[in-house]
Length: 191
Length: 362
Image (cartoon, rainbow over all chains, first blue to last red; front, side):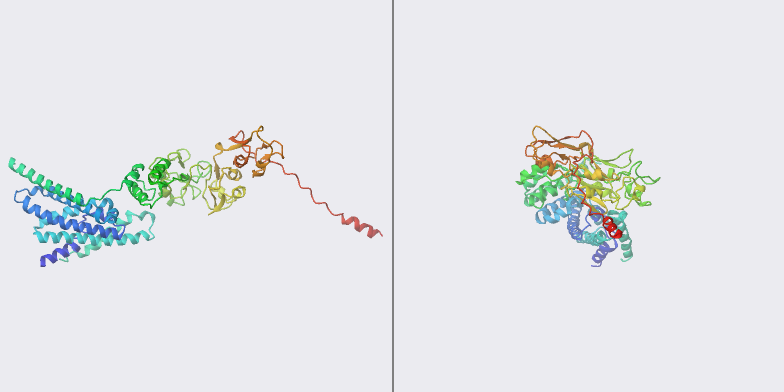
């Protein structure tokens, strides 16, 4: 129980995927113009990361380790993630076409998103069992969702604000993201 | 590394791949979304530049919007009238081709006209505009450092190397408006491509002091507004605004402009010519002409004088189709018009001094 709590606090706040580890910056910057889209993206990433952690653990435990093929982890994990994202895309296109349109090209980009591969590798390095792997995956994704939603909120406000011309668009966004990262540093030493 | 290890690795990955491939295939069947054939057909018509000038996210977005009925067929500036026609055919509507708009430069501040300061800095109009109200004597001038040239995806706007101001190639301009957004001096605007007159200055100031900054400045004298007989000119923000729906292209405003800020394409100016064999002297044309440029009494052959601006109003009215618009033989002479008969001055009353004198004498 203690370990689960540590993982939760750690993955969501202290080692936030976007703010501390700097994973998943592509959708972080690309989908954060509106709060609804950002939340939708966060949910898609949570689903992918949780299920990817599960399947990656199973593949690693039952296929790679018994045959001594740990060196194939990267390839195997990427295969898993790519398939999962494709399935998510197909499901979204059918079930929620508006979200599918809103996410656009950033949905298949979850595949190349280092956050998903990162969490899979992290589970292996930390030696988590099945339950803990899934929890870690889901928690990291929730942390990512938190940071992307916070950022989207700020960006929506910046868009209507009175910015000097040189600070419009990405310039202001990146400076803000940097300041947010500094703020998240405050969680250091919590666990 | 033993062969067994390599084979095992290959086998494991292949099995994984096959299983996942099958999974994807099944999911694809279960979650298949039928694609709309209308959208596909519409998308075929579009050029695929994904420039976004239509206001939709890429050509796919526009095709989808038209199919749903949320957009009109004529919004694609790049595809042009040809594309609009094809789309109209698919959607079963009649295509009314809108007026083609191109980028227009409202400045003549080059070379001798507008003095240039010695600018040593970043070769970008945004940077130059921040320095001391711009790098030309007039703060509204085109700075000629090429920000618009770099913004254009169609290679349609260039900085003239001698004049150092922007020049638009009307044929290549697709109307995407990227240059208009890029210009920090707001010199560029969208105007109809077939226009023959335009205002080439957007300095809102008034008075002859402006001419010290640029001798082609619009001083706000409103001579053009007064000269227009068709109601197409009005003043907006200190510069004239041409209503191109009303403008007939007579170029009288450009004739009237004292500084040359109103520019016209004089080479395409036409003049009316009355075929004497067909003319019956009905005077309909003389009544139409707002410039008093046709003379001729009733039942007399009519003749076009030098004040003709080539507006074409007479040719449209002639019942015998005796008037044609031909290329000009000579530039317009404003004074060569029908002389109105002088008005006789009112008869003066008898001089009052003559009436007083007899009284004094008596």
